[in-house]
View (cartoon, helix red, strand yellow):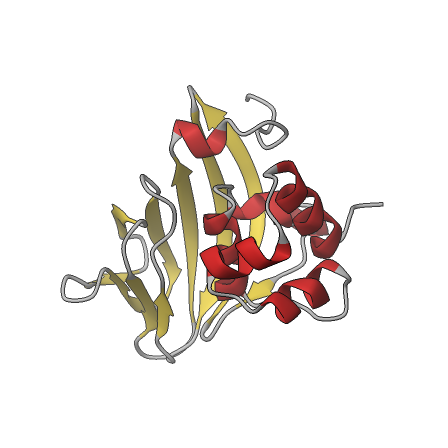
Length: 183
């Protein structure tokens, strides 16, 4: 049986030698919220998981159990995503997510230094990218942008489906226990 997000979060925090208080300070997530997550007394939103993994210098997938058909969706203000798979390419970790966007704007905080994101639109029309430089994309179009700065996601007409690739730099991808198998 796969470990819960809470078990994975606690293990990752302890491996990094961080106290609850330190993780709360660095991530901007309340100590009580982190404790409730670690004890599986509450679910986590996508923005919370990103804040925690950024503070822990780890990929988002380090907290998620399963991928593909076994994966549980993780949701944000306007994004619901499922981890499809992950690969190492050289020393870079790439995680692939299928996400559905709504017409509500998702404001995403900066992730760890060096992270890049690639979005490919599968269905619909979206507005994606760093504030002030967002790009409108239609089905079949892609864009790659820095994920280590603030960025936005929004479907423009109705719900839209995208593939999101998270490209993690070597210092994040090579954390012990976080590298998936090479393919």
